[in-house]
Image 1 (cartoon, helix red, strand yellow):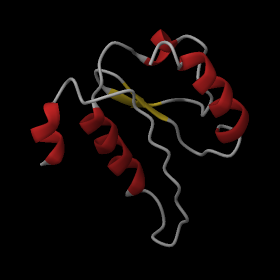
Image 2 (tube, rainbow, N blue to C red; image 1 turned 90 degrees about the vertical axis):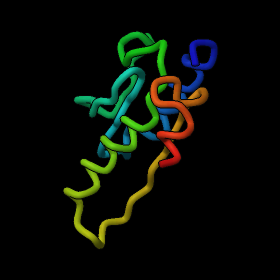
Image 3 (tube, rainbow, N blue to C red; image 1 turned 30 degrees about the vertical axis):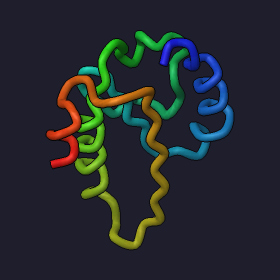
Image 4 (cartoon, rainbow, N blue to C red; image 1 turned 45 degrees about the horizontal axis):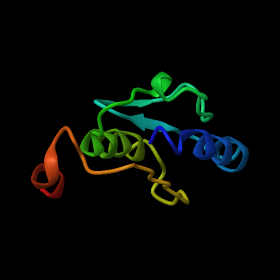
Length: 92
């Protein structure tokens, strides 16, 4: 993600963040960020690992708090395979 981070942050912060309600970032673990804007430095949001399973688990925690009639758009961005759990656990 490192080589694409600056471009992705610029696009996200200009186009998505102003309208977003929640931002979940993930590397070794996942967390709900205190604001919807990304930091310029990737290390501020983790880095080095990819835990897609944790990201979706954190997403599920947030979804149960929403009204069933809510309109939801999810943008999922990752630079690769789940390096923490592997394909089998993620598929399950």
